[in-house]
Amino acid sequence: MKEKLEQILEKAMRELNHAFAIDEVDKLDILRVGFLGKKGELTSVLKQMGGLSAEERPVVGKLANDVREQIETKLSEVSAELKAQKVRKAMEDEKIDVTLPGKKRAIGRLHPLTAVMNEIEEIFLGMGFEVASGPEVEYVYYNFDALNSPPDHPARDITDTFYITDDILLRCHTSTVQVRVMETQKPPIRIISPGRVYRSDAVDATHSPIFHQIEGLYIDKGVTMSDLAGTLDELMKRLYGGDCKIRLRPHHFPFTEPSAEVDVMCFKCAGQGCSMCKQEGYIELLGAGMVHPKVLKNCGIDPEVYSGFAFGMGLDRVVMRRYGITDLRLLYENDVRFLGQF
Ligand code: DAH
Image (cartoon, rainbow, N blue to C red; front, side):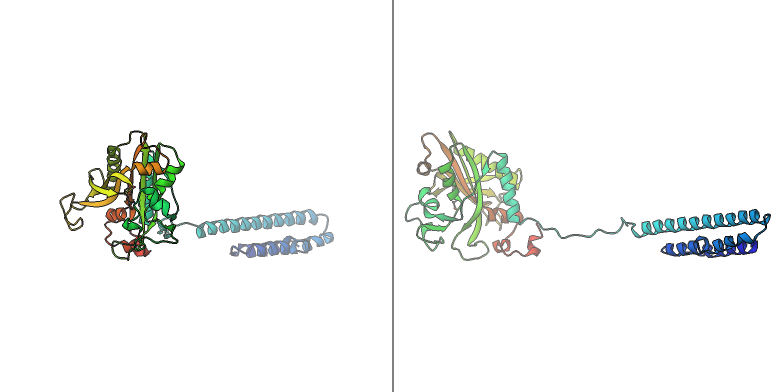
């Protein structure tokens, strides 16, 4: 029996010293049952102990226990080693190589019109203005009549403005919002109103039937032309840099008196005259003036008490000057190869 036990031990060690693959934990269990289980090899030897003499029994019994212990110890060693291997492999497999280049995701960006519009809004919000909006499909009243536009004004012509009915049109400027705001708010009023406007123009490098304006309006007691000049000067310095200069030229608009066209110093030649500014040194960017007393009256504001300035600026032009874009159509074609540059 002693020999039999030694054989079992020797066989168990041989088999357990074999290299196991990581996923062979099941095989270990089979071996455990084979050697130590109820029907295992060791048990079947022990069952024959009855046939031993009284002197032999304790000796064989002790040997049997030793064999069991050694097999158990070996089994748990192998099992622990398998578990450790498994952890090592997992760490190996899940290792992150931080030196690998990251995956680049294509990120969208704001259209230059939106980006500059946001920037201008921020500048005006900082000066205490609020952002107002109005409908693009508008009554003739808000687009022309309330703004003191004479009945024979050329812009009223159907060749210039898109009419929907005799009374309703697509607004041709954002000045409509001035009227809507003054009708509903009491001074002091400080608003800007960015938005889309429509004119019956053929498409070319500088014209589009849809474009964008930003209207500004400041009504309070004692507002003067110098407030207008100061506000626009600040705006342009913030947009184009600290040494940017503006120039006001007398002009005529029905809704302002006095009126001016406002030019910005050409940033390409700094006022010297070049091909970009057609040798002028300055580039026209907006119309402005002191709100006409008749317009104030039309909106229920007493011109004897209040005064104010207004301006209307072409956003598309500002964007084109800002980025040196020479063809307006590029802003509307939505070609990402173009838009991705900004
Ligand atoms: N509405 C004018 C246009 O579209 C621009 C303009 C000029 C707006 C003078 C104003 C202003 O508010 O005061 O050409």
